Image (cartoon, rainbow, N blue to C red):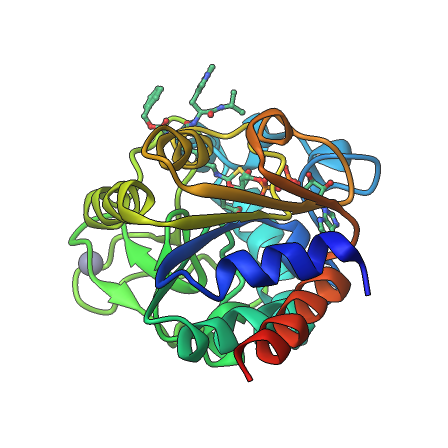
Length: 247
Ligand code: BJW
Ligand code: ZN
């Protein structure tokens, strides 16, 4: 066992309140593509064409086609050991929240209850007219989905560049970051704001920062523990060691 993991587990075993900020890297072992990096979506597609309100107004068909592909893909995936570990953390610690930038629903599918979605969810659509949320919307080939209530176009219920994050989720996330004794930052490049501010906020309030990523990020410099490796491998090791220490 990695001695750093043992040391971390000893420290965590005395703590009560914590959280994790997760990003696309947490789901990559489930087969969901990340955004940045060699195999990332933004290496193949331009965010300006697909993930802004302007892109949607310009070409809703193109945007929906891309989202349909991603919705199908995500529906065919399953949570991995990283998601399941975070679910376990909810019963190991007195208070534990998963603040996610992911839109793939995999934390919920793994059974996590305290999930805060900062960038929305692919499995929901929202009416651009009346704002109604739909969880079972059907998209027919070559047709744009419309609101059964008001007839306006539906859009994916996700947060695009230049859009505000859901205010309640954002407020709650900052509150959690400021009140956490420990704060995990897992599988995120930590470059998209305001989510990327959360680890710095937690650090400023004295939280222990634990990063799990296959490469360095802007958070690495402030991390008390930095594990360079796959989330689906490192997190279960931390969980196992935590259980050993607690016994
Ligand atoms: C592993 C692993 C394994 C891999 N184990 N690790 C200049 C111009 C315009 C705007 C801005 C600007 N400067 C700042 C802004 C604001 C902008 C922003 O931050 N831009 C930066 C990119 C510069 N932010 C916004 O616009 C936000 N809104 C906002 O700020 O509102 C106020 C405002 C309004 C108007 C103007 C200015 C401000 C909204 C951001 C919305 C982000 N939306 C997306 C798409 C969601 C919908 C969808 O999925 O289609 O969210 S973009 C994309 O990035 C997605 C992600 O949630 C987000 C973060 O990405 P994430 O999760 O970190 O993924 P990656 O791929 O970047 O990283 C993966 C990591 O995993 C890597 O580090 C790997 O190493 C690692 N990894 N495998 C462990 N197995
Ligand atoms: Zn409507």
